[in-house]
Length: 415
Ligand SMILES: Cc1cc2nc3c(=O)[nH]c(=O)nc-3n(C[C@H](O)[C@H](O)[C@H](O)COP(=O)(O)OP(=O)(O)OC[C@H]3O[C@@H](n4cnc5c(N)ncnc54)[C@H](O)[C@@H]3O)c2cc1C
Image 1 (cartoon, rainbow, N blue to C red):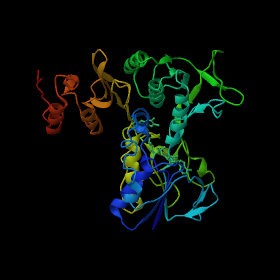
Image 2 (cartoon, rainbow, N blue to C red):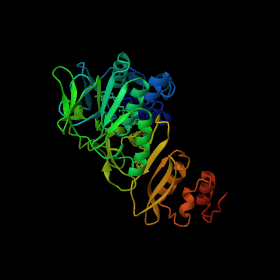
Image 3 (cartoon, rainbow, N blue to C red):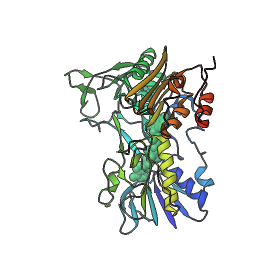
Image 4 (tube, rainbow, N blue to C red):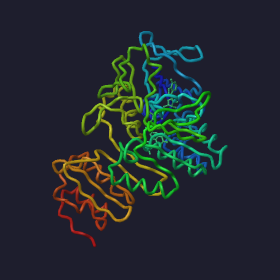
């Protein structure tokens, strides 16, 4: 059997790895339109700052050789023809498959006029990130303007600042990372960003990028214009689905899949940032474009593809911010019927509850209780008897975990 995987990001590589775990004989062809070994995008900023390769090439630079995967770089799939079980490649060649996995990920984008002008950069792939960083390094002391203060926009701002650029971020909302953080946590993150010398303009709406042959400014709805040397469009991420036009695959925002990561077309699966799955807690259809979801989906898709029937429990809404200098963790909803909070300076623990159950939490500073809160949330445990001791920094995460696991919720404070 030949399995072809489109995209060698965390999802694509995990599909290959999982297939190999169960089956030594399956032929695995992994396609990447990029010229690198499979890498982990969350490690890119660290790689550009420190040169460290181990976390970037997270399964080792020789992963494909070890897994006996036929890895083809610089290969872009241009069309999928399920009736013939074939793919068309951009160089004119075609490739047949028995099973196909779409793991083509996503790009940063902003739905703004002028988005395609040269000088407007992406940072979602290593190829794109190299272009941005090289341009940034050519302009020490130059100006960078990032449209969108989502978590990737913020991570890019920190990286460019570290590289010596003068960085401004504009954000439509009244807070940074509005989809990830509640107002209080966002306010803490914002103060740290400003301490690091990043200018953040909230409540500022971009109308588009302007310029003739290249981007020369960002026009604001207010009528003003902001000029910089480097621009980044980062208001969201958009799944790579263009090459699926005419394939008959059900595509909404991403590729729609069922509980087994199957698409509507036989023998075609999808996983990772390109897949439109459902939220584990709310059941809502969504693309939760984060690393752990991509890996979990890939494992499930690979098992199902081999006939090892495995339902997908749903995606999780969680994220962490690295490199800010202050750990920030966001999991689940950012509001509830009830809110428990503890704060000391920039250290915050905040839990959102509905009907005595955790539906989300935000942490800054010490994030060591994240694993426990998440486990209680996923178990839908009634935490009312634990009460606000859950937030008390004098109670160790370990003691809480033990108490929660044993059902002995009458914790004493360990002063
Ligand atoms: C800067 C940054 C920081 C991040 N930080 C975090 C974090 O802290 N925590 C977290 O959970 N997540 C984080 N993420 C998100 C995480 O990286 C993604 O969720 C994850 O990479 C998704 O993996 P994927 O394999 O689905 O897609 P991708 O990583 O996007 O990989 C898809 C690959 O497919 C290739 N491809 C696309 N179309 C084609 C085609 N037609 N033919 C051939 N190849 C194709 C692409 O070029 C790409 O190499 C971060 C992302 C970025 C960019």
